[in-house]
Image (cartoon, rainbow, N blue to C red; front, side):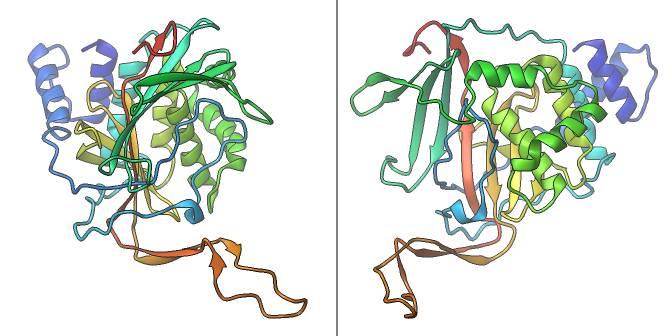
Length: 339
């Protein structure tokens, strides 16, 4: 454990003799004891939300796009109270920042590929037994993409199909690498950049923007990574959920914030603070009707049909996991198919 991390801990935990190594060890043990021993979680299902490495006009999931696929009676755990900036629980975000900011993350070469596997639970027709691992490769210069077909055990390479405001992995890396690393300046920039994010207020959009960066930048410049943790701690309504298990069965902690959709969770490794996954959990009971195409044309002036083709209605319950994705370790490789 490096001295920067211990300094962050001394600023947030009760101080002991500053030069006593045993005190440092006990402080670290006290902090991490709170984030270990994850409890058993109810099994959850989710509609696939594809992780994109090319984004331009950044968007968030909207309520109308959600398909709730689990009717569960056991609510997900409620995050720790007091999640405003400066609360005791948020101290872990400064420890996370100190942990990652001096790491190294070399920029990939244009002809290298980024391997991005993810694990999801779904009741969609393409899922097997309600659970699936999706494997994708993106060429860093954005010219090609590839995916693995588990049925045929085959990797297929495609043209990336970049269009409009879509960004290649290289362009998105450059965007992230160019973000300010001073917390105030970063927040100002992200508020501006989050204007296209779906959300009811600026703080909701800001949290969504940071989520998109973690999701779509598997190769994260370390100092920007640290700055994003510090920015999260400054957003009103952000809380920490301890001792959770992600979809892949890995222990983690979650940085959470409530939105109109539900509780949005960014799941982190409790020791390395790598981004491991995301969940959305319903925070209220409600019924959602998804729009569809009209069943048929109506004469001019006639009342539209009461039902529309493809329209569906579903009920969401408090504690129901609506979206649940685990991002498995990604890496830079030389060709599609490499893992």
